[in-house]
Length: 412
Image (cartoon, one colour):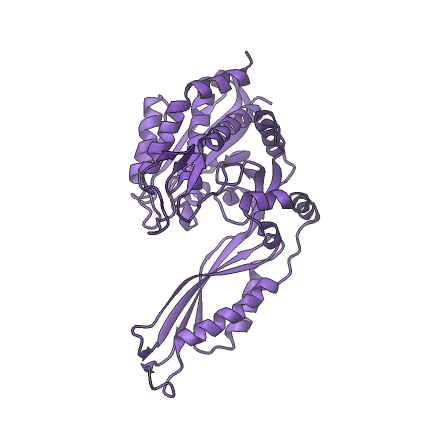
């Protein structure tokens, strides 16, 4: 029996253990905001301790612990980093047919907040580390596991903190299990630019519309004008454009029909809008928060120039940047892509194609340092919505793919 066959046999033998860990992980609440992941980090730490896998906890803030474990193979080689986050989206109140914190197994799928984003992928990283640690004498180089907090809010106390203060977590390549769809491998992602617009007027009684302009009505007009941002053209590098064109049908399968169309475009979402105190009062203040996604080939300066032009039409508007990460990408035909594609082909008989994603992940932080970083995970079913779930079949497939791909990378 080959090493890879033995690894697959071990995963099959431990199938119930892996699924039970994953379901228990979902049951440990870790919504962000507020972002306190201490209990969830403790859940992972307990498992690593039981498996005799040494790790250290790095907590730039007490409520945001990050777990880091590493080991060396028996020969010199390259350094592979596994990355997954512990925090999850908050739970919306409607639309759930299962307890969002229950980890229920229903009709072959596991339900719960964080099921796909990203406790399935983080579980895959943890078990990949466990299995390869057992055969470390057969490996070259180094393997590092990072389980981080604070991904959902740009990661200042999570992966970003580790990257900036602990160079040993950077490595030569990153493998991440964020939701992607099992038919695609993410080699890049659009860049989120979050801007708050605050509109202030004097306000007045609702019947006295001659006294004051309405901040909410101005906000509505401003939102309509901001749609102009979506018409800004992008200049995607040729090799990236070629890869995306070839993958257009798979992009729609992975992220929903229409995803391939908006991938190369600037998009605008008004995620928050607050204003007004009472129906018969003219609101004196309104705040909107816009989530603008930059495709490859569009920079922040281009967006902000247009934003400033639009806002100049509204003297009552103040602008505040509340978050930004530029678009990122690495080689769509890199070595880890080749490894992942072969293993997916062998395991499932399908061709996983390289794509750029709509949403942001911690993988971008490695790409910013010119370290190739790739994402392969389950479909994003219910991500950020209700009845978030992953089928057991897809979950176990992701575990297998990560274990075999990490092994391949560390034995070449």
